[in-house]
Image (tube, rainbow, N blue to C red):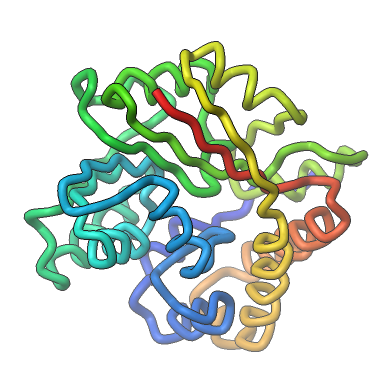
Length: 266
C-alpha cells in the first residue's frame, strides 16, 4: 500500500513562495491560487451557473488557500464565507482578503464540513465545493447540511473528482488516495444522495479533461524544480506527490476515475 503524503499543508503554508507561484502559473496558466483541478476559465463558468451577483451570499466548503474565493468575490461582487479544515489555508485566506481589501465581503472559518455546519438554516443563496467532496465523511449527512443552510431556490454546485468509471487495482486506489481521506463513489450515487437530501433539478457534466490536463502539467512543473523543492519538501513526500500526480493523470486520461460536476436546486 502507498504511504500517506502531504499536499495541502505545504502548498498553503508556502503559498506566497516564488517557487509555488511559478508552479501554479505553469500548471494552471492563470494563477488564482488554486490547488485542485480547477482552471480560472472553468471557475468563471461556475459563477454563471451559481447566478452570482452583488447581493449573493455564498458558502464555499473547503476554501483552501483562499485564492479562488478572493478571485470569485472580485469577479462577481458576492459575499463569501469559506470553511476550511486546514489551519494554514484559513490563515492564508485571511491574509489574501485583507491584502485585497475584501475583509468586509469575506469570512474564513476553520472547521470540519463533515460535521454539522456552524450556520443557521436558510443562510446562503449558493453553496459550492471544488474537488473536495471526496474528503468529507458521511456524504448523506453532508448533503442534508448543504440543503439546510441554503435558502429556498438556492443553488448547489460541486465537483467530485473520483467517480468510479472503470476497473481499478488496489495499488491504484492507494496511490490516488495517498494525500488523505477519500470516498470513492460509483456512477449514480451522487444523484441518489442529492435526491434523498431533498434537492431537485439535479444535473451532471463530465469535466474530467481538466483533471487529466492539470495533473500532467502539475507533475511536469514540479519535476523541473525538483532540486529546489527538495530544499522545502522531504524526499519521501516529494516522490509521493509525484507518484500521486502521475496516477491522477493515468486514471483520468483512461477515464477509469472521472471528475463530474453536479448542480442542484433547493
